[in-house]
Image (cartoon, rainbow, N blue to C red; front, side, top):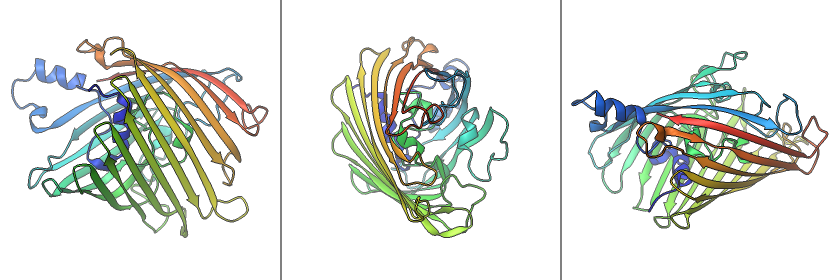
Length: 387
């Protein structure tokens, strides 16, 4: 069965499942090097993959003129062509059948998105340069107990298991991100254990320094991370994850808890659907001096027309009425787009994608256009070359 790339995004969201974030089916760079330059000592022979991606984009807001676009993360600049990410990674996945195996991943990006993904104490001291560098992931994986009920350890900096859409653009159907992406961290630095309880169920748990904390920590407390993945069938999967702990500077007593649920289902060879729900409890950020409760849902559908063209739709809702620094209203978004891979059969051109999209945002109160409107419409396109 031909798996739509949205399905792999759900798998990638469970970064604890010991799979790398979504990659092209065969990396262009590695294929060219190993088929044309090398006869022996190939990295693929020992399970190592390497490559990266280049992403550039532009967004147009119909009711603005070169201003910032609300409810956005990386695509907030109107009519400003952006080099979002130039990325490179080296990855080795574990063989859990071996009595001892070691793996891991090094992943780095340079570009406009790195302004926002940097973690505390690691490439976070440049506030003025548009294109910056970030080490998005650097971790080691170990097999502690091999076999069908394997136990594995991950230590280092890794992407968060929370959230359906990822920083890595290869994983997503759209260039822009849904509203729930605003709520969750980008990464954690810590240790995680993953236990393969059965063929269909894996559970994970561990500790980290906190949301987007790495070489430095803004307090003296640790976070707890946990969850699991369950495959109801080959076509249907659920991922539940959570994190809880103090998140504020010099404050070890006020906890922030995030819970995220992802459901995905391949209806047919052509149609894929997914849903996400996120809930955030914040004991320190309520508007009346009490706790804040922020929550929302998102839904995706993808229809594969051909190997070259996929039609995608998305909708999300965010109730953000209680946070001190929130929108103080209910916000909704709906996006339609096309994922175009014009040279999918070409050895090099298969890495090229274009993702044009149209998006509308609605808020119950006027939060757009400097507080003068409750509607916002944008058009955007990005190009990704996976190598």
